[in-house]
Length: 245
Image 1 (cartoon, rainbow, N blue to C red):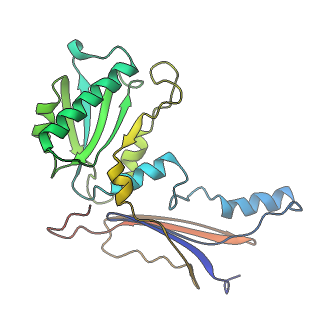
Image 2 (spheres, helix red, strand yellow; image 1 turned 60 degrees about the vertical axis):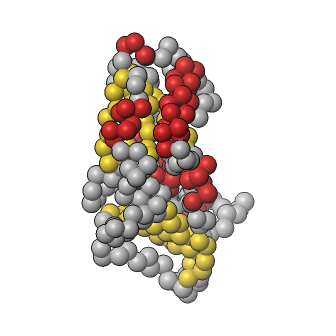
């Protein structure tokens, strides 16, 4: 098994690199329940996030495109401007987005989502934009319906873009606060255009090299008699004066 070529997938997004290498078995209608279960440990590993299997995977990659200059905002409403429903909240976002476009006078990268189920159950927005496009003082000026709190997209070494991706997608549609079938998290088309395609290639070994100076990293692997799977991710060290975008 070790002499067979490994199927490799590598995805880059800003300073984030995610890669998996596997020897993949084939399913058969003759497989016993045990054989099928063991093969699926390789074919559908729980640690597989190098390709876009889930909403969290897709959002994580878009957030990584902000590099080290993204800020995460929580936009809340005062009592006088609190929307009555999800539709009104969507209209507020569109109005706010127009104000941002007029201020910057050019298109910009963004990710936003609408929430309203946790905490005190008031509608609010989360937003990610580049510091080079909007400093916090400008966002607070443009958001004239309540309060705007900000924090860095990455909190420092050991943090990951996946933390914010999970947070922004934590609320399911409930049919009341969040209508069924509504996409509560959206991003600019420009981020799709900036995401490079996944690299697919063959390799003789399953070694995934993680740079010693990576600011954050993680890995997962599994192996059995039917095949093997290895996954790793890391965030490259920031180069002074050269933001990833």
